[in-house]
Amino acid sequence: MAHPGMIFLMYHELEMASRGLCQSEPGYVRYILPVETFRSQMKWLQQAGVRGLNVSQALKYPAGPGVCITFDDGCETDLIAAAPILRDLNLNATFYLTAGFLGKPGYLSAEQARELDAAGFEIGCHSMTHAYLSDLDEFGLKREIVEAKQRLEEIMGHEIEHFSCPGGRYNARTIAVARSAGFRSVANSEFHENTPATSAYDLGRVAMLRDLPLGKFGAVCRGQGLWKKRLWHQIRRGLQKMIGNRMYDRVRGALLGESPE
Image (cartoon, rainbow, N blue to C red; front, side, top):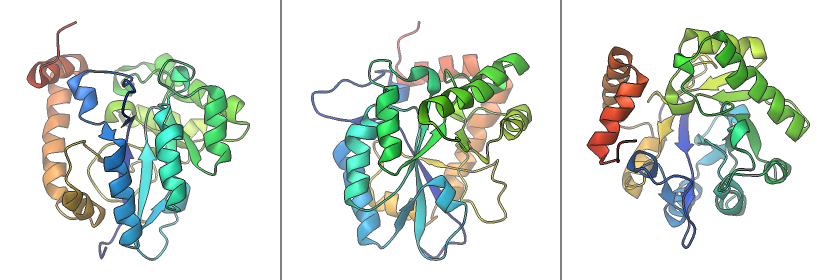
């Protein structure tokens, strides 16, 4: 674990036997780990002596081996699958909830979100409706960032300090609105480790894919090989800016075999 920064891991829904996923598109499923795969990864952290931290803890950059564990979307498996595994292994995490998804099938209810919070895990915000923030005007950004924060704070009964960008799509206006709303950090999906010199509003995260072997998971946690992921990510981001988010998603969906709308 001799790397100069902190790796932030990005998870989504976990796949459980006899339980349907929130979405079925290949572009979504590739980010969904079977629950036993997640358990194996968390056991690897424990056995390697690597602490699992939430965002507030990670931003203090404590000495010793550690990674930041984050979940996006607010799926029900956050509470019924991820939380018990993390608790059993004495690991922490931040769960970024999409405020407008609470109560929908497959997602946490408001009561379940409070239960996750009461269990000692950190609650963050993942927008109101999971819209691509870089496509929005000021009114849309206010709804997705400011109003989402307010709604979650009403539900949780305390301040929500950390925000993550849906689909990793964001721009300078996104950051400005998040800062003015009172968020202490903004996480994206850029493949870089974070250090004390990293802006808290530019926190890179490494997306966990379902086909990642355990050995490569260990390498990611050590900060190894991220330059390859970062290069490919930069190519994708350049293409998104060139052709726009909507067209990019159509091309990506076609390549992944998704049915057109």
